[in-house]
Image (tube, rainbow, N blue to C red):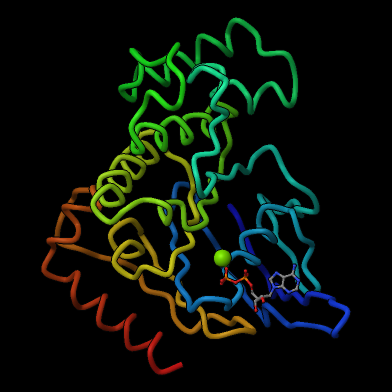
Length: 251
Ligand code: ADP
Ligand code: MG
């Protein structure tokens, strides 16, 4: 279990201290899909960097199974905002990069990477280059690269913001389906209310900077589907949307 206990964070700048996170406490269950929504500049990316061990809290602590996170941890992986595939490497070459930065990939690593690409419809593109793939396929390849290092927890910071609206809906659907099948704990940062509700088991709404939790919503919809597109059609969707909209509006 991932736990944030009284986490606070201040940036030190030449002009003085900027308090980005005031106090955030959260328990994130294994396999849970959590979204964090808040106004621009409220501290969402800072909070993810604290969870990912890129920053150390000024107050409180972040733990996985009671072990404090003090530096980037192999159990936690980031899905990049843009796909960040290297154009001169094949899709398989790109997927193996995460492993290569740690050690020489083994035949078994290669086999697993190929199996993941095949499982998620990129089997025919293993030896192609990124510019031969559509935007959605590239995003999928980037997610597979993140999964290839076998993390427990995925951090997604506005991962679809570079995509146009229609592509964004399909890619979000694919990404959510893959994460469900791979059973990863995931934390998605977004400023898109619909994206947050449609993808998540729970939505956390943050205040303006310095961030505190304004509210937590367990998203219970009358559909068994995990597909964000199907979930958007659930009758309760609008109810959550309006409540979160108001919480963000009255800040
Ligand atoms: P969000 O992701 O919610 O848009 P961020 O976490 O990126 O917000 O930033 C929160 C606040 O911290 C912002 O007001 C931003 O200006 C400030 N901030 C972010 N990064 C730095 C930094 N490296 N140095 C100083 N202030 C920063
Ligand atoms: Mg941000």
